[in-house]
Image 1 (cartoon, rainbow, N blue to C red):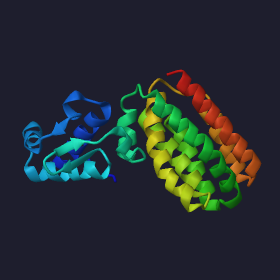
Image 2 (image 1 turned 180 degrees about the vertical axis):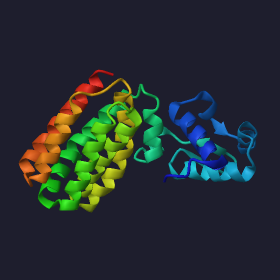
Image 3 (image 1 turned 180 degrees about the horizontal axis):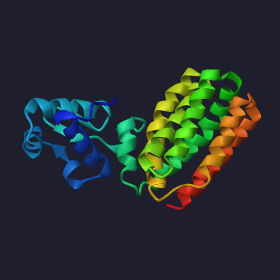
Length: 228
């Protein structure tokens, strides 16, 4: 469940959600809605709606006599885009980087193989546009990351597999956060070669080459992460 980050409601969800996920001691025990209202200078209605949003993400719950409390980590909706983003913002979450690498290794080579068999000319054009945008924004980490996410989103959409397209939402959210860590350290000289190989294989309709190229791309990503 995503939400508008603007306005008082969005600010409360963003700050409190980040605190909970990071393990901030002030946001790990019972949560007093009245105290939260004072802290954020918002009404009870805003606090209530913010807690409802966080409850939908599995982060908090409320029970009679127990009040509002933070749920155990095992109950969190770990595939929620905002929970993923908050986890990555901690920068030191190496377990999350590992989990993402494993998910990508399972999903993206298969997605590239299917995309090579099922892509349309419109898909190829969208991939080319995203690739060109990546090259044009290599010195701008935020814009470069956005173009990278678009490239991978278009690729999975081109697979014409509804379940893979659902996973695209998760991969895109996590990839965006992960790439901001990697790209912020400087330009990546290998990104153009690996992405171009995937693009060429998909455009040529070569499933074997597309799968192999994606595995090479993921290997390059792993090397980039090792340099963090």
